[in-house]
Length: 189
Image (tube, rainbow, N blue to C red; front, side, top):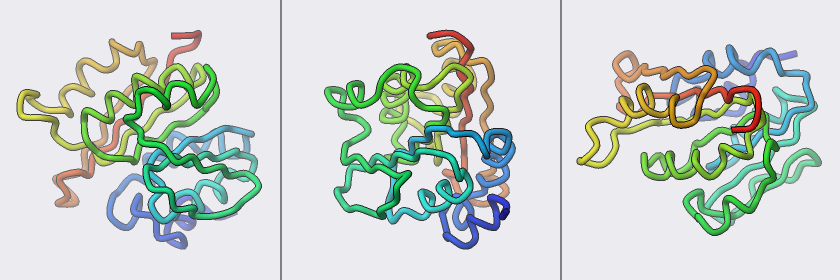
């Protein structure tokens, strides 16, 4: 069985080629690798990470959501939805409560969309589920810093059991090499 890094290398996902997220993902996701989880990834692009998740999680159902209508692959454990992550009329109606074990926001990378999407999809995350936000950038000028928002305010608003911000932008030289990880508390929130 290949490691997540080996799979990422073969699929050429930007989670490894452009960013340094694979060790973080492996740390959090390895304990559920063989479980029949449901995973949603927002932002599909060419499907490299979808291929990665399907191999890494052999028993998972994977859903990709993207604003672009292109279809990246056909697989019995994969479903793709054409939708903008900031569509406040549609996104909250797409999934039932406590539906996903893992949600990954690799969509627009705008702080406003990250926050809106989290607000709309948090109810669809199962208790103890993991919510990842990739490529975090600084927010609008009236916000001091979106990283500060995720570190100080978000855990209290969403009552996270666990939250971490992984900022490797200084080491990699990429201003957007920042990954947020939130774990939902037990019980419905």
